[in-house]
Length: 259
Ligand SMILES: [Zn+2]
Image 1 (spheres, protein in one colour):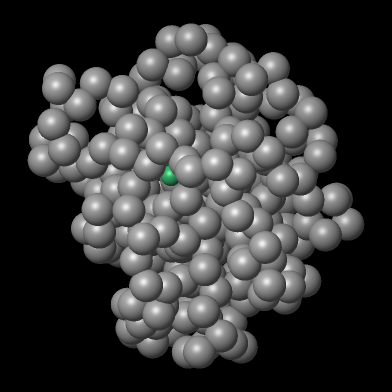
Image 2 (cartoon, rainbow, N blue to C red):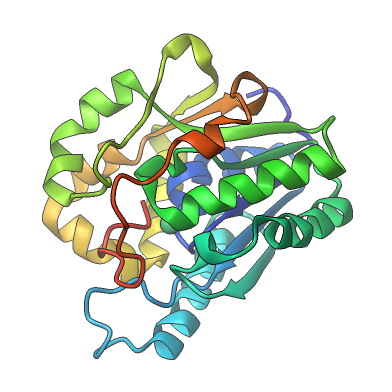
C-alpha cells in the first residue's frame, strides 16, 4: 500500500473503524504513519437488550473495547466525542462540521477516511458523519485526500448470504461502487487478517454474537475486504439526494448495525 501520510479516520460508533478500516490502519501504523481515530458516539445504544445493558454501562464498555481494538491495530491516538448514539442526523450539520474541522486542523491529516453518503449500511448516524466530515474537509483541508468506505460489487456478492442472514443493511443498501471507481482496496489475509479479527474480538459486545452465528471461517471471510472510493469522484449533492425510505429506528440499533 502506498503511504497515506497522516491518516485521520472519523466514524460514528466504536467498531465502525475496525470493520471498515482495521487493515488499513494497521498497515499505515506498520509503515510508521500517524493514525488518529475518532468515534463521534460511544455506541451506548448498540444493544437489543437495553435493560441488561443500560446506556451508561454499555457506553463505558464500548469505550474500553475501542481502546483495546485500536491497541491491537497499533493506533494510540483516538477520540470519542460522546454525542448521543442514534441522534446524529438530528444535529445541525454545521455544528458537526465545526467540531470535526477543529480536529482536522489539529491533526493535519494527509488522508481522511470515513463513510460515503450512503453510510455503508444506511444507518442515519453513519450518513450524518459523512456529511459532517465532507463539509469539514472542504472548509479546512481540501488538499487532503478524502476516502469513503465502499462496498464493491464482488465483495457484496461474496458476502450476500451472510449479509442477509445477519440483516446488516437497511432497505435499499448497500450501495455498490463499480470496481473502476475504487481508489484503494485491501483483501486481507494471513497475519493482517488475524490482527483485524483480534481487534474485532476486542469489540466483544458487538461481535461475539455474530461470530457465534457465522462461525470463525465465515466471519473471517466476511471481514477480509476493505475498499474505498475517492470523495472527489462523488458529487456533493449525493449527500442530499439519498434520503431514508422510511424513518429509521435510531434508538434501538440491531446488534450488528455497527457493521
Ligand atoms: Zn456504526
